[in-house]
Image (cartoon, rainbow, N blue to C red; front, side, top):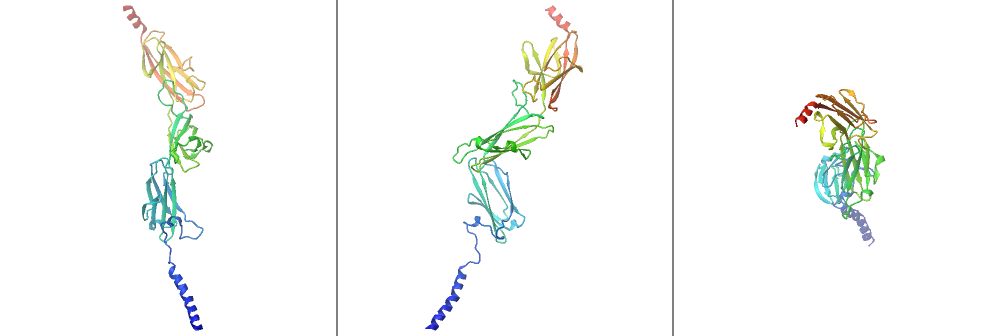
Length: 358
């Protein structure tokens, strides 16, 4: 009886480990539930660094987005890739290191998940969230235009400008997010302007320089309580200030529909020329910021300094006078321009003879 008990104990010691080994798999393949939650194949505590580029970084609603992946420690071209959007497989295969998709509409979001099974059996996972929104930028140059001008004030050298961000952010329930509750990050030519960035700072003020290099002003807008983001930019190209001459008629007033330039036939013995500046840094045409230098046939006129001047043909003879005007800003050296017009006078006695005959 004792021999039977000893024999049974020996058999149990031999069979139990064998059964345990038989029930343990040689390796554990990731299932659909855990494939996207594991990073293996490298020592514990070390996460493999992969380079991920998302273009554009802040996409607009419905804009095409591209994601590129590369690694400097593994050959990802031999790895097996699975790309998912909101958990649904979109692309899979060996060496699929890039993925393209359309960003969602404003107010909606999506998550792109990436699973990589490397050649050595290790895995890498990443995920990317996208909640795009819209932002427009309203541009206002703070330069002078006359009251009758129907165009837009233009940005010139050393002039100031104002930009207003107009975001269109929709919450998950479809309500519009107040622009004053968003965070604004302003940049000029890639340099962040921290003094004008921050919570609720949707208005940006800037000034042009002496070097006329185009300005690329951009703003990134984000919501502090959600993943909503938007980016907008605007290119500001420099324009040149101008001065246009008009006739100030004693009966009709300023004849603004017809500028005087080049050759001008004066059919009366007298004319008043009015200079109207465009795109100068001044609140009005007659101010202490602007100086007008009038000349006739190269000689300075006594009335120089005003925005208007009178010319009269006292001799009554036919003739021609070259009128030039230099307009300059007192402190902004590049805001300067010249205007030239040739006034052609008729003989007064010819007009008198017509009146007598009448």
